[in-house]
Each structure stands twice: as C-alpha cells, then as structure tokens.
Amino acid sequence: MKKLISGTFVSTITMLAFMAPAYAALKPAADTDGNGKISLEEFVIFNGEKDQLQRDKNKDGVFSTEEWVGKSASDYRTSSLSRFDSNGDGSLSIDEVVNVYIWAFGERDKNKDGELTGGEIPKPFKK
Image (cartoon, rainbow, N blue to C red; front, side, top):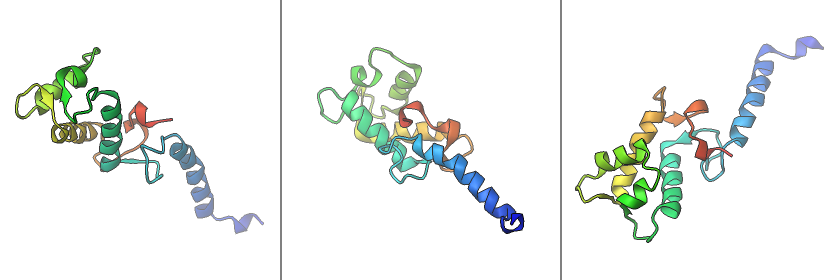
C-alpha cells in the first residue's frame, strides 16, 4: 500500500497544505483572483480604493497635502508627496498617486518577480 503513494503526490499535498493558509490570509478585495499573491494591478486598485475612501475627504479625486500626508506625517507619505507631485501644486492627482503605488510595489517586491508574496505583502492586504 505504501508504494502507491509517490513522492510527487506527497510533495504536492504538502505544498497545497502550506499554500491554503496563505490564500485565506489575504482579504478578497486585495487578492481578487484568489491566488494568494498580490499583482501590481491588485496592489494599485486596492490601495487606490482604500485611499480614496479614507483620505480624499472632499471626494474631488485629488489628494491635497493634508489629505495625503494626514496627521501622522509618515516618511512614506511625506517623501512620496514631494517625489511624485510632478506639477508642484502640493497635491497628488490620480495619475500621480498611481505612480506612487507603482513605486511602492517595486520597493516591496524584493525578489523582483512581479508579485507580492509572503513577507512582501503589506498588513492592510491581510485578514
């Protein structure tokens, strides 16, 4: 009976057992295809929707300095405002914000495989 279970089968089952919790650990709104990884598109859309709801107080589609940086004035928010405010108006348009997310994705994708997995995935994406 033991000979019927191949090493490949056991390896596959073991791999699936470890993968299942990773799938379940991500918010469905973040991992829209359910593959347990965050693509650039998923990263941009999830962050955009979250920031639009939480930060764009007047719902004009533009993040003022106050809306983008907020009270916390984190290094990420402050540096991204100065770095990506291409027209120097002190606010970020949707296009400028998308560039922030693309840059942030690249910074998180340590192995440069085009996907965020494991420790590369930010906390807000997890359940």
